[in-house]
Image (tube, rainbow, N blue to C red; front, side):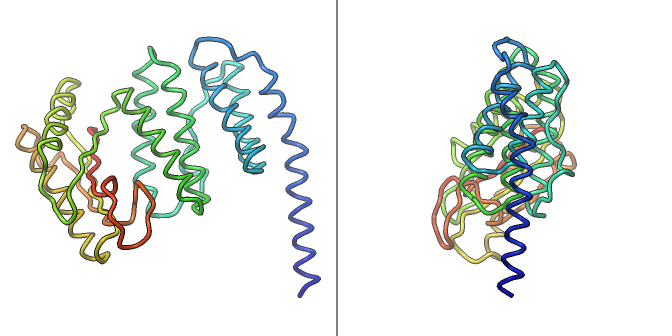
Length: 267
């Protein structure tokens, strides 16, 4: 058994070494490229350069380092480089719906926000980063960081995503939450959108069955508020995810205000 394990280890090391040897030139070429322009392609190339170097040098993830370097070089050459498709990653089932929604919003923003190339480029790179980390699914802090960066940039782009927060064990909407919902309704009407996707979440206090019901109650509260602002209930898709999709990773039975939330997007 020891011989077998050693053989597998050596084979794996040789494969990693080959990937590193063949991929280094892509990273080196991207680092040497002139990426000083102001357009979207140059901004995207810079974002992928940073990702490629992080994966290559800091994480020693040669596969993804090479992947991002190739995307950066294509962007630098003026190619229309799109965000990664979900099908290219082996994603955990619980993350697919959230990433699908994020991908769809990103594609819409790419088409509508030509005046903000650097922000759109950063959003695309952070989405790819989020999906990569979610596929690996063993560094919760990295998943959360990439996702937060994506959400922060998309908020600056006015992508139609909103978040409201709740007290422990409660599905009641605070004055702050009602103000966010009021703004979301105004924004959606301004761009002639008639529907929303609403997703409720909890922290890890309580058992999973209770938190599932609580997340549905929170999503229902937001849905009802949107209906009160003139949107038809049939156009509002609603889900409750319980404690399965934490924004801030925590241990079980831990209070965390940022996890007690409803995220909703117009569509």
